[in-house]
Length: 437
Image 1 (cartoon, rainbow, N blue to C red):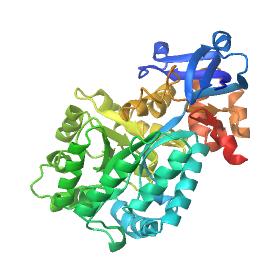
Image 2 (spheres, one colour):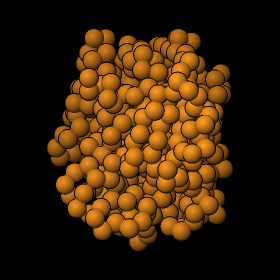
Image 3 (cartoon, rainbow, N blue to C red):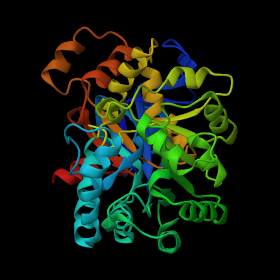
Image 4 (cartoon, one colour):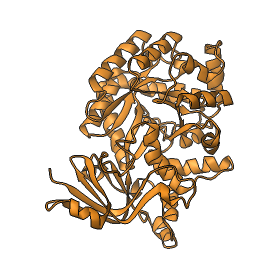
């Protein structure tokens, strides 16, 4: 197959950058090159070196002076909530009952699910996101629609139908047995098909009965290589209600612990109000706490203590995510802009290299897929985003005074959005420009 040679300023990460001057934590090429063939990166490095490996007939695309980075990764997002984003005036439980659950009932209609899945993945690509961990609705057809659309685009995505059998309207409930059976069928049909990954998805302890939680635990035991995703400790009223429903539990995390849902492939959205015992339990099991700053601010849920969770003796694995539609933007740039503010309110700072590590390699490591995505390493999947720090008049003006890569990255994070995303490659295919044509 003919190869493609991309040229541009190139940035990727090898580990967490301890400081803004921790240069060994990242690889930066002022004039970099990537050779892509059959959906993979086959050569990566200085353009002068890489050009020789591209071969005579390689298609050359020059993205200078823009930045080439690994495609962004969003680790917690609800694809059925596109039409509830920007809904006014509720905290978590009211928000679910007033806006979310009525919206999700529409996904009993498979045609509606297919339309929203298409528009959702369009939006992800437009914003530079090439991989998501997505919640579908309770309806099996919603997950089928999501996976079919994702597979057609050859995207590496993780998703699952939510399991929920109580404390919600009839139109968004399954049963312990139907939730189990539908999940098993979806795993058989979609997990490992192309680049698709299945996540066992009990929505949260409030909407799953003990019987359904048992079924979720059984699924995790039967499929130990799969992801599990749910919500934890987002809101004080949610925590109190969970304790009422599971009065035997030591705390909210203990509910999931009891049913065998903690582990290195387990993604817990929010984790804002954790006790030290809960943080220890997540740390010891290798579970992932998912930081959703725009959602936490919008719903008034609280401030995720990012730096303390990283620094504590039993540190937490952390991912970052939009949490659309509780979150207010599809962009991981906007997410880290709000994340910076949340961390600042906790009296800390997150440097721009740490932000970009988080939404690329950091999130890939949190999802246990860093061997496939999240870097620009040879042999990995060619998921790439091209960023333009001069995309708007305000950005161009600010760039006149930016003198370092760190300043440029912080500008992209603070002022950037989908307009700063010039191109997106999904498994080597130019996806954003294709979408526009």
